[in-house]
Image 1 (cartoon, rainbow, N blue to C red):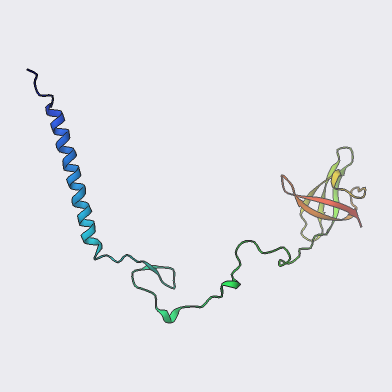
Image 2 (tube, rainbow, N blue to C red; image 1 turned 180 degrees about the vertical axis):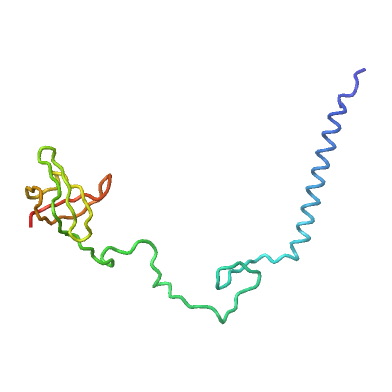
Length: 146
């Protein structure tokens, strides 16, 4: 005759599994009993704080939904920037094809490449230009002599 296949370790694991299952059921019942006492709603007061009391209806503010603008404003609604700027050529190397222009208003230096020129320029020329974002900062483009 063969002996029982159930060892002491198997019996212990089975006892632990049944105890876990029983504990889980007890916790579930406790949560159900406690849920009748807990308020399920959380409100936000006029200062943005979370509270368990509902807000006062007299402090309610009417907001017209059509006045709320979601996203970026349309291009025609935004104010038009001054695109054309004036400045002075501080350095220009014709052999290498690049140089720098100093803005007459902000005194900032802007890089200029020969591909962004309309007229030929040299150092100390007064020019008008537009700015365009480049890899390392703002670049002067559409550069014309004044």
